[in-house]
Length: 402
Ligand SMILES: Cc1ncc(C[n+]2csc(CCOP(=O)(O)OP(=O)(O)O)c2C)c(N)n1
Ligand SMILES: [Mg+2]
Image (tube, rainbow, N blue to C red; front, top):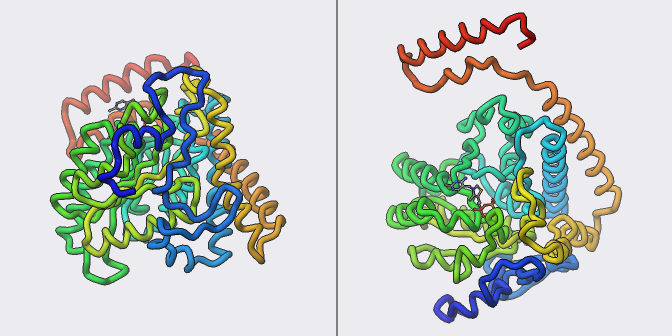
C-alpha cells in the first residue's frame, strides 16, 4: 500500500476504529499498527524478515546476542525505576509521576542508537531516553518532588530538561538543529562530528501548532532532526482517532520529508529505524519522522484514572505485546541466553529501586528563597527587594516549628 492509496476509511480501519464515539465497554485499539509497521520480532519472539523491514535489516544483523541482552537490561531497569516512581508518588514522596510502562522499547531503541554528540529534546515521559543519556534517575525524581527544576546539566548529557508544555520542545529542537547546521556539524563525513537532534512527543501533541510549525521549519531548512512520536494511543483521555484521520507517520509526506511507522514495542525495530533516521539527519538528508506505535499501559500520570475512559480489555490485548516479554522470548530462543541472566537483571533492578528510593527520601528541601535565583541572568533590583522582603517575612515564623 502506498501513501496515496490511503483513504480515511482505510486509515481508520488501520487503527481498528470505525466510529468516533468514546464509549467504555468496547476495546477500540486492536490494531498492531497494520502491514506498513516495521517489526523484527513477532509477539512470540520469532525473528521476522519481510519487505517492510528489509531496508533496516543491516542494523539488526550487526547486533550481537550480548547487545540484545544489554537492551533487555536497559528496559528492565527503567521499568523498575518507573514503578518505583509511581510508588513514591503514592507514598507522598513525589508530587506527580508520569509513567512510561509499555513504552520502554520505543525509548531504549532510539536512546541506544544516538551518538554522544547527538542532542535530545524530551517531553516529560522520556525516562528511558534519560537513562540511555546517562542522566541520574534520582534527578528525575527530584524534579517531580519539586526540589529542583531538572537537576542535570542539559549540555553535559545532551539531554534537554523535560518540557511539560505539549509540543513546545519540538520548536526548541529545530532551533538547535538549525544551529548545528550553522556550526557546520552536518554532512562532513566525520562520525564524531556530524550531529543529529531528536525531539520526543506524543500522538496528542501532533494536534498542536508547535509540532506542525517545527515540521515546516525543519523541512524548508533541511535540518538534521528526527521527530520521534510515541503514539501510545491516548492523550490523557482522548483516543488516537480524535487526533487524526490518517496514520500519523503519513503526515511527514505533506511537509516534504520521510516518515515511517515502527512497532514501538519491538526494541530491535525502534533501534534499527532510529539508526537509519539518525544517519540520514547527520549526513545532511534532512528531517525524518518516526511514529513508534505503542501503548500507554498505565495511567497518564498518577493524577489520572484511566478506568474512567478506557476498557480494561484493551489493556489485556496490549499486555500480550509487552516489549520486555517479546525480547525475552527472542533471547531465550537463541543460543547463549539462559534464565540466570534474567534473574540477575531482576536482582540488579531490586538494588536500583532501593538506591533511588533512599536517595529520593533523603533529598533535602531547598531554601524557599531559591525561587528568586536564576530568574534573570543579570542582577535585578526589583527582584532582590522582593527576595529580601520574602526572607524577612519567613524569618518572622522562626521558632514556630516552620
Ligand atoms: C500546551 C498544553 N496544552 C495542554 C496541556 C495538558 N496536557 C498535559 S499532557 C496532555 C496530553 C498529551 O498527550 P500526548 O501528546 O499523546 O502525550 P502522552 O502523555 O500520551 O505521552 C495534555 C493535553 C499541556 N501540558 N500543554
Ligand atoms: Mg499519547
